[in-house]
Length: 470
Image (cartoon, rainbow, N blue to C red):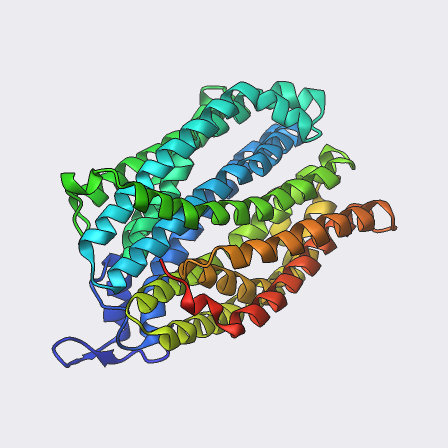
């Protein structure tokens, strides 16, 4: 909620909370380089939070239906999702470049520059998704085996993994097109895109899994179709309905310098999220050593955690948009204040959620499974990881703020140190060299993200990100 729910509209009349909420849900043309930061964060974050909840529901829906097929099917989805983190890394990395560049041009009031940044981001997305799709289709079974999946899991899940990796286009362009909208300050469009995709996923998954008897493969088919329709809607709105800038034929003319500039911003962002998501793969690889039952329990717990942290991503993205636009408007102090304000709101929300999970870990886990072997690991992973929610909330906002400024190398180095040089060795040591066993990996996640938050705060306060040119 904004810190001042009554602000002045353009006509000079006070704006009510209801009016501001309506603006957040249905779209806005507000200038976010002026006025109340609390109101700006609210207008941007509400649709972004709802958008992220919709994105997270994909994973929750899939695991809810697939859990009825047994531990093997859950392991297929869990391990494939871990591999998909690499796709998400590229998708988010390319999206970071789009958001930072579009937001900076909007802050400068350069509509033509924003349109050209959008088209060249799309070029980059097409190239990236084509390469990943070819590799994914060919090597899907090999990836499952490399992740330590049992032979039966590989047989059951090869087609699921092939569809998810081969159809990465829909994932990448959901992230990319929505990032363009967010950079422009029109987060409500991204929210609608995700809800359209998610509603279709909820409808199609049980049809393909149970009615058409595709089993776990049906989850991949339903999810890919749902996301594909969302991409189609986003593309239509970008080319036909975007309010802050219009894309014309001239904006598609290839500009080598602009394309290389986007690569320069996006490449370290891809590496940044690859480092982070590869650490999740590393954690799963540690846990697979304890069998499919433990993997299944962990996947339930971590998916609930990720779903609960999605509001943090919404607030973080709001901060990134405000950073980019205000730096473009030559207002670095306002950009910094926006970040700390968003971090404060995020800490309040996530600490409350984390406390609830610590207390109610078992009933929450029982929503997804009653299996007496899987349930204890789901409960313990959820409870242990939830201890760090305060740190997660602050760290996520700060890291995303660096990206919004176009300073993608700083969080990349932070992630490299914390996740590869600290978290994975710690997880292995605690899991295999102490009596904690698989629980040691859960503790490694909590400890590492807490370290990341502290390190990010120290570096952010130095302020070098304010000098980044985009």
